[in-house]
Image 1 (cartoon, helix red, strand yellow):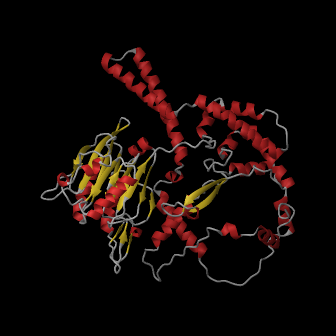
Image 2 (tube, helix red, strand yellow):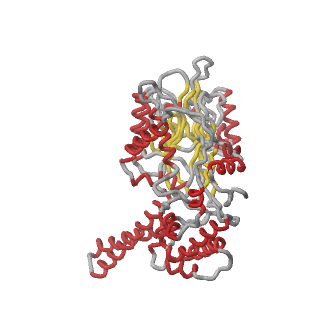
Length: 556
């Protein structure tokens, strides 16, 4: 069964809706959920012989949209809420039914799927989905696909069908579909057997980029199974409200504006009382406040600017087609094209920063890079021998004096120049590129703050704040123990990103399936609470044992 709930869909399979247990379960479900569109898969009865008052009493339309099958009853029913827009069938077959509806003046498509158990027949379904995708409308497809995308989506006896999965994945790629983030149970189907028990993820939902533009957010929830061997899939789409306390974000293309450095210089030159370490964050906050208002005036909504520039070009060119070219129209077209190119450039830079596609720079070299990384890591991680040893005194007095020496301005500048200009932003919102661009303005205060820390060994509260970002360790994480905290301070070195570890781990996991002499083995170590069990005093004692001085920080 399926639902469009606020911006949502739901799939639930009842084998024989005429059965008393199935009818009762369906009634309770519709009563307990605020649904807009309902689809029942495999009702096993003709819609004409089913009492229309069943849906009408629950606030749904009397008219039931269904597909047609040769010498068989329909296996799809689609029913809309009375208050909802009228549904129009645009495609129907034995494995899929697609309906069109109006949502806030925008036509959207919903495809309900019940794929065949036979791989050869599913190929026809993949072709049908490609036909619907070609309509280029906001589109969501969901239901029982009777195929898995990955090997870990099936557990129990039976071989994993690589060929069927490859065809499924090819269809998803060809249709530019995006798999919905899922919460709840990992598996959606079971064979309900004690011996030879099999579970798999056969029911799922996909949406395209146009759907995301209309609704803003998408996700599905796997509900508990009741009388069916399939679990209900609740697909929801809702606009994500913008947080009121969204942090400041600096955009690199701001630095290309002529008035940028003049603004920073004017704000930075204002007199500020306090020590060197306190002055730096105060001035950064002042610059941040000034840049917010300046950016709103200098860079309006880039999406609107791109749309307006495109319409202006279209309007000028339509006029040229109607009345012919003239000197005035020639100038207007050239000016409109220049404006459009500028808007496209700014729009592209903005989304490039948001996407942070660092790997795109490597292009096809990704595979070679990962292979080389794996080989290097294998060499580094090879354990050839182990010996019992105590903590050595590695740091002598000469090394300690070098570590504690006050850094020179050139040394501090060299470190700043080594920061990745596109690294994750810290709480102050300024990337490494800002400090490099405005070094002549901010350099003295920056170096003064660093030198003051080395001399005093203390940082005021708030200077070293960081963001804590929670990354889910499993799909559909809802509890805190299923998230991994990552502290973002925007101080990563150039060329090094957190995702490199994730990519490397993925490649290592894939290599475990490669046939090698002696076999392969992977060990997962859970260190989720390592930060809770470390003693600060113990760390300081170990550092002292290595030979570090206790002058700065270690005795505090």
